[in-house]
Image (cartoon, rainbow, N blue to C red; front, top):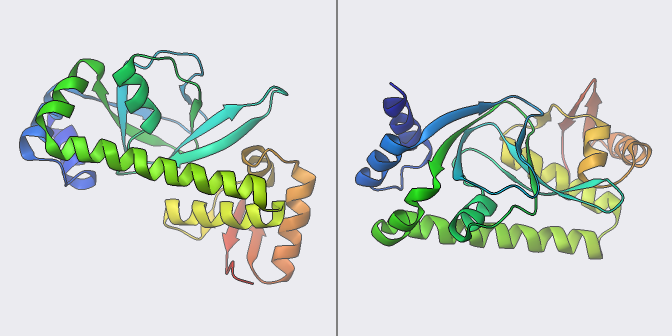
Length: 216
């Protein structure tokens, strides 16, 4: 039954894969579900499989020397963890921590398949390249925001990313969680959100933020 479910999820979220590739992953992969807040991957761990996300969202975080963490990027349905692809292929330890930011389901593709997938399946090869390229572009955007932008602009950028990733303008997130992701304080984020609310850009609710317009 799990094999059939994996194939169904691949058909839905990874239609670009060749049918023999979907069959191979379905035969050898496994399904796993994480609840909101679950640690998917600890920094320093070896990665034994690649994750293909079919539902929910996973945040990848970098720990700072002061104990704070910084959101590097998110992965959602139809995407793979670029870090797991790299570390699985090179058998290296993870430099980032991964945490489910909502209930999340993934297909785990075992390490033993990596060489075969890269060598025999063109769609997987291009999928890996595209995943690397997308993550590199996202990292450049994050670097630009951190180095060249103020916290107000970083907050707008962050909310845009969240709405695009989730496909909804109502985000179930607190000011403290936003502050954690942006390596700021709740007081700073709450003050900026208040200004944005006065401009009609957002509406703040209990443990939620509704994005109205971010071009004000």
